[in-house]
Amino acid sequence: MSGKGMNLTLKVWRQRSAQAPGGFVTYYAKNISPDMSFLEMLDTVNQDLALRGDDPIAFDHDCREGICGMCSLYINGRAHGPERATTTCQLHMRKFKDGDTITIEPWRAAPFPIVRDLVVDRSAFDRVIAAGGYVSVNVGNAPDGNAVPVPKPDAEKAMDAAACIGCGACVAACKNASAMLFVGAKVSQMALLPQGHPERRERVLSMVRTMDEAGFGNCTNESECEAACPKEISVSNIARLNREYLLALLKD
Image (spheres, helix red, strand yellow):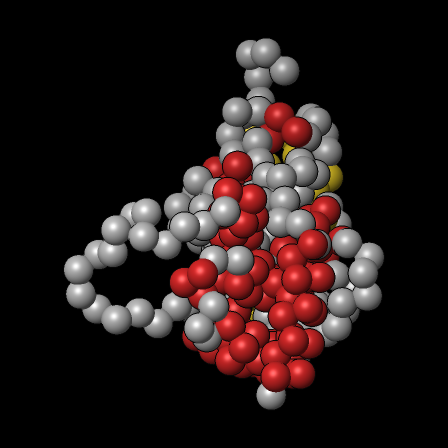
């Protein structure tokens, strides 16, 4: 590929709104640099569409550094594309070959209704977080950093769970559209630390109730969520969520 770019065929889902019918539209991306990110490739396609007077392809993005979780695209049948532990914005075109056909879709889950084209409404996750993904504290001076000892294994597990960026790939990859990995990670990061213990019972009951109300499905332990997660959140967090939920029910 030295000295020239790639020519690609894109089959992109276009849909004006959640109520409008949608379908795949074929575009041709020409002279694409292998060093471009996937979103930069879409930017280039949109520039060409704008020059022709056509509507650009709507897709979500923000930080483009693998942190915000906005770049939620289903690429060739995989959440975020073919590269494991990689967000769409960090996926580079060198993972594809000249002449490839790439199919690009939005997340497919009832709790994530399509807004337009490749953009979905993931506010259901926001409602789950608002239901209990926080720690209530008394305001005042910052406590001494060593005043509350935390065992190192617990701290590491909490940090691993907190790496979840809420992109929704776990839901998109799951045949049941389950949000258990997301909710498990958010419950775990609090349950593992002493600061999260006072509201432990109320938190898990409220977050699970909100998850169910949003219409997410149940987990059937097939681990597609872990395989699709760009931050490699472990399904052990789902087991911890189940334990926390059952203990909360017993204490209720």
